[in-house]
Length: 364
View 1 (cartoon, rainbow, N blue to C red):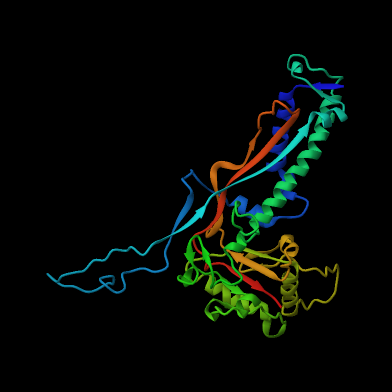
View 2: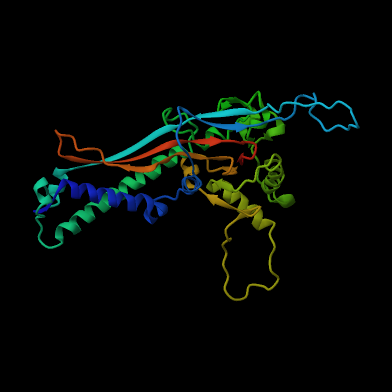
């Protein structure tokens, strides 16, 4: 049997986890998770607080016409002043998240590894065989662990906040199918119309609160007249930028992307040089207003292959507690169990400071 101390096993777990979670293996993943990667890349931090992450937002300015405009004056004319106090606060409760793995000494023994504290002084090995065994064993366990982190965190990122009330609220709790209902960050979508996202969904069109000012029904894609879907996107882009938003994410399901590709092929520009030389029947990567149209398989998994989401990651983003996103912890070994534990902790919340720069659009 190869021998290692408990401290050595814990060290291998920690070092290996750091490689898998932060290194390239997580980035490639088993199934691509571009939205999760995008949010984690753009994460902002906060230093801590009692309970809420609080962001200032503003939907109107002035004082209702009382001394809040530019006026002329001359000599000793009396001038007026106003207090610009129309600001609101959007409040989000930060949440703690955990995923942990365990490894028992029994499993190690089955792979020819014996753990004993006395090996701190004298390692019992036969060459480097034990190191190779331990490395292979850790690779398999940590690869599984890192994918489970990515997969389950990805589900939260794409959630609507209802699956786990103790976890962060996902993107679909900010970009709503029916934007004229409910509250976000404690602010009412009914009371504050400029706090609404934009939506072209069947659910919105069928709801009694439907307001065409903020979107419409799902779009029936058509190649005629330059493309019906592309035309709606073109018109909506102006509205998304109307109040200062600059959308930089365009994520869609497979059927939505296929509809866009069909419209682009049917209305694209073709060369008159004929079919000479090498031919490639595929299309290159699609862009809209310079933003790449990214396929996220998670939307297919959520039965949303006909949906696309557009947002500005400066307006909707992850806020993480400083130093506590993907932070490793190695809990002390319980006195009555011969096992090792490894944890990954994330503290934070998804937040929004502006929502009228975001859009959900569905095709028929």
